[in-house]
Image 1: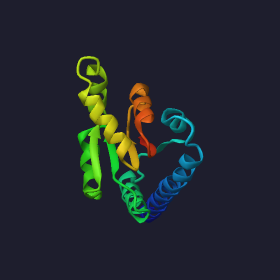
Image 2: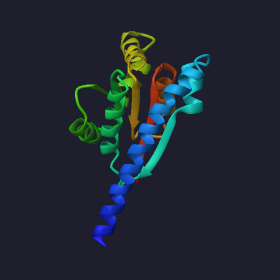
Image 3: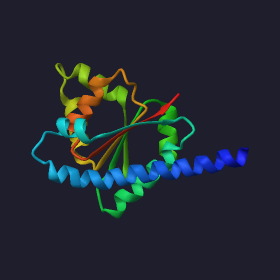
Image 4: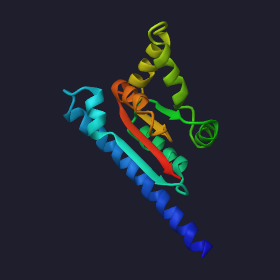
Length: 164
């Protein structure tokens, strides 16, 4: 029984990797074809939002996604993480072409933007400069953060989480 579970996990991990890589490649074409619409509208229509079973290896799939990005000679990946465990897991499998920021930092920047816009400006520049933005386990109650990321992301946007 353990072997069947291990085999199904390997198969599921490969499927997830294939989905993410195929979406990344297709999103480049979609963005080129729909360059006349705003980032927010584009990512609302074409952004990838996924909930996967908890035992699927999101981090291995992100490693495959990073390889696909490099094959296409694209710029950096930005990972927006939800907690320190998520950060550690992601950091363990990805390399130096990845920038990390927590969703807490984005939320704080949004709250203080009226009095000090420099934090939000830095985040917008970052979102605009990367090829792939990946949100990991963003709480569904934070639609304002997701919309901010959608509006400022110029590249591929993937939001992925685990079903608990």
